[in-house]
Length: 163
Image (cartoon, rainbow, N blue to C red; front, top):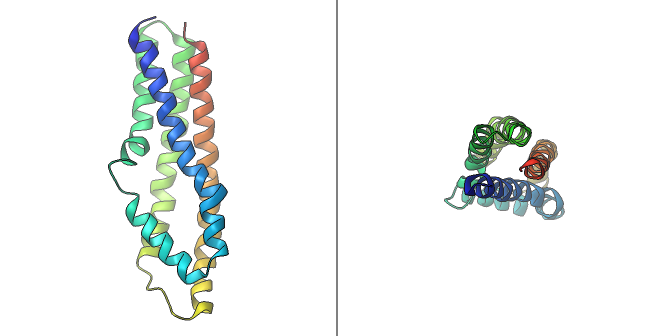
């Protein structure tokens, strides 16, 4: 086994796992916590988190995962590892289309719209804003979580196919 057919699949696993874990954390703790908070606090906290996520730590995982899995698929294909390459190619498609593009097309515009909201002092007005945002945002987050988890699973199956 060549180093590229060992290191690249493991790097793909690390990237896909980090992406899935990031989305999963929003599902199982962050949004539940925000939903339980005063809606004024929830809006402010979500605005702050969305503003902070565009950083040099998150970007390589978010944008890099489909790149790394795609390169891994190509390298494995060239190394005559077609079954493994197929799984990495499938993971690339699922992650790129159903996690990254879905995020860019739905969650990010929702976040940008929320960023423009002036947090009202009236709790009922804040609750209306939060209830118009959170359930839809969570639905799309759960979808991108499931699809990035599927991509992670495909990377794992691909690794098991490497000879």
